[in-house]
Figure 1 (cartoon, rainbow, N blue to C red):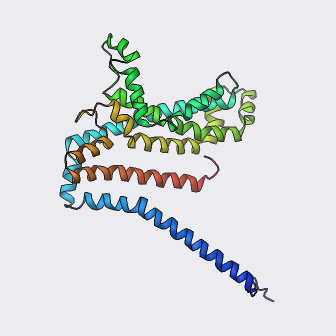
Figure 2 (figure 1 turned 90 degrees about the vertical axis):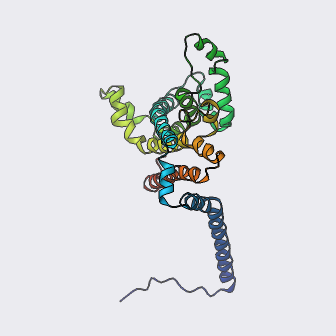
Figure 3 (figure 1 turned 90 degrees about the horizontal axis):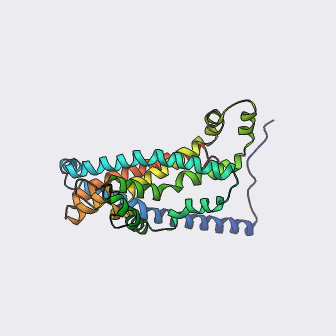
Length: 287
């Protein structure tokens, strides 16, 4: 005998009316979300690629391989390669200290880590310029040793570190707090040293959160404009990162070149979103 598993039909008029009302609300919310996504995100991305390729593939490619644009891409990638490892090391060290130890200033350290989210990048760039510029508190002293930190790669790296330093730590701290210290303490009692405990016990637990934070930090480094524009000096072919190069080309009335360079940033942003979504889908509780 076959047992029917189909749901019984709903005949109560009040219940049917309630279901119809909920269905209309759901459809309205979905329509609003899709419309918002199209207007705010999809249409601008489509416009970037449409304008970049409007004059043909050859013109697009000739703008991409312009020496100044290639240098801007290289400088952006170089900055990310320098900043990301430092961010990973700082994020792990700060998270470990905050979660595993109780010390004076612990709460202040957590607040400082979150500080870049509450300060405008342009203001942060001005602060670095006032401190490390040739007329700043530290910069004036360094100038006596012929050391210049601003208007070069060093200044770009410093402000990029500032704006990206929270991403790794704020992903690791909650996960480490939830995971606890039991496994690490067990490893230490069995004779493992600090590095062995970290590599074989702690790192496997935090690897996905670490990767998640690294992806977000890398995206912010590549796309940072405000702070970098203040400390880079905007020197053509020398200190122009890719976002600055986009602005420079547009100001020079080379709209096609500006949109062509912007497609590189857009592709990086899309790749970042895909990686982020993939990690969230596969490991929803590990970041």
